[in-house]
Structures are given as C-alpha cells and as structure tokens.
Length: 104
Image (tube, rainbow, N blue to C red; front, side, top):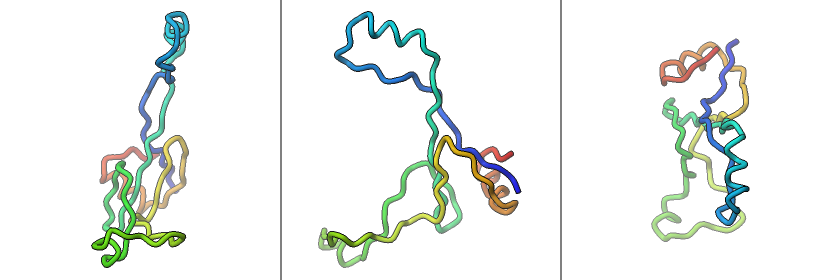
C-alpha cells in the first residue's frame, strides 16, 4: 500500500481589508501556512483539481429545473481532500503518478 497526500499551496493568512496599519503589519510576522488542494478522480480515470459538477437528468437540464430535495448523481468516483493523507492501492498509486502527482 502507498500513501497519497494531495498537493498544497503556501498562502498567508487572510487579513481583514478594514484592518489598521498595525494589524496588517502583524501578519508579516507569521509564516505562510499551507492550503490543501482537492483532487477528484473522474469516471474516465483522469484526475482534476477543478471541482466537477453533478450529473443531472438531461430533461431537467434543458428546462433549467432541478427538483428540490433530490440529490443529483455526482460526476466523480473519488475525492482526495487536501491536507489529508490517504492509503491507496498500488494500481491507484500508479494512476496518480501517471497523472503527475507524488505518491509515497
């Protein structure tokens, strides 16, 4: 079994736009923190970091309607949430590496 951790981006914590100069300067003393990126595996076996939409009934899509209280079918097979580590099978690890991700 291999482990997969989705990639992260170093970002600086948010600053309120209404903050005073002293409050803004205070954030300069904090190191950037990591923000995880989610990775979705689509039914065709490809991976994306762009959140896919849901599969809706074609008739509802043409009419512009979605019934309330009915959950549409998700258009992905697996989602790996950023900031978490997952155990993946060797086959899944090979697919992730082929897609350009790092697997340990």
